[in-house]
Structures are given as structure tokens and as C-alpha cells.
Image (tube, rainbow, N blue to C red; front, side, top):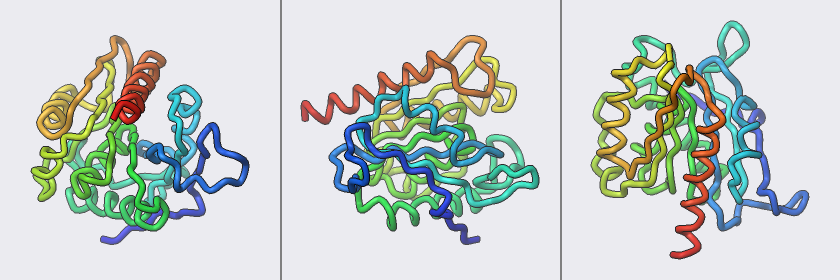
Length: 222
């Protein structure tokens, strides 16, 4: 299965300090890539950007599979937390192909919600050196071993996993498996939020902003 990202649907948000019409592909800050959840669309996570404090530009992709109600999916849902590995890989390959064409070899911060989080982890497994950090919100890892897992563990990029304890979509066992996997393969910061359902909460957004600010500070010190 070969999938492709429709770049005409991509929402691009320039860095806060960029001049109108400026080329931001050479910006020192990594590109922040947003991957929405199942049934959503490319604009779904864009409102988070004003709260995250990311100093560089951002791009929000539309998943490649249309749904009957008008939303979009990265891969079909079978069993929550145990998707068809070939379908997950096809979605990851589509994201990586988009990055190869449009990111200009830049380092990337990838933020994915729910199914988008699964794709975020899969792209990092496929191309471990391309990603500066990973943010997974109410997401899950595909449990099928991947040839890139050892290289990802060696790179151990910073990662953030946020989830609510009232999430009725992602089972707790899947979240725990994902947390354990991320702890083994990345440098994990994990936050759980009391009463948060399958969504993104205000404190979670603040914590992600702190996480990203820590990455920016590390770059400056380095």
C-alpha cells in the first residue's frame, strides 16, 4: 500500500518572528510537524500553536485516507492499540516522503494526537536521526517490532507522553504499553491528567510548552 500526503491541504504556520513571505526552511529551529487524530483534519491541532511557544515554523498535515463523514484517517481502525503494521508503516512512509520533499533536510519536532501519535512514533522508528523530539498526546505505539527500533533506542530522542486517566478510547493497558515502549526507546517525560478524557487539556498544553522550551534551552546551551 502506497499513500501520499496532499500538500495542497497542508497548513503552514511561519515562525512568530518571520517576515511576511519569508522563506523559513533555513530557520535554525526545527520544524514542528502536527499529525491530527482519527476522523479529524489538518486544522484540528493548529490552535495549540499559539500556546506552545515554538520559535520556529510549523506544518499540519492532512491524513491520506478520507472518511465518510468528511474527516481523515492515517490508517484503518481494527483493534485499538494493535493496528495492521503495514497500514501504520504506509502512513509513516507518506509522512517521511512529504518531509523529504518539503522539509529541506531540517530536524523535525513531531506532535501527534491519538492515531497521529502512533504515526509520529512510527516515523521516528523508520528514520530515527531525522527527529529532534517526539510529543504523543493520548496516542499509542504499534506493538509490532520494527527494524529501526534499536537505532531509535540508541538515539534516544527526548519525548513527551501525555494522557488522561478518563480516556475511554485508548485502553489503560495500551497506554501503559506505550509508556514502557517509549521509556525503552526514547528519553521520556510522561504526564497523566486526572479526569481528562480523550482530548487535550490546558495543563497538558502548558506541560508540552515547558517540554519544548527545555529543548530550545538545550540547543542554546549546546
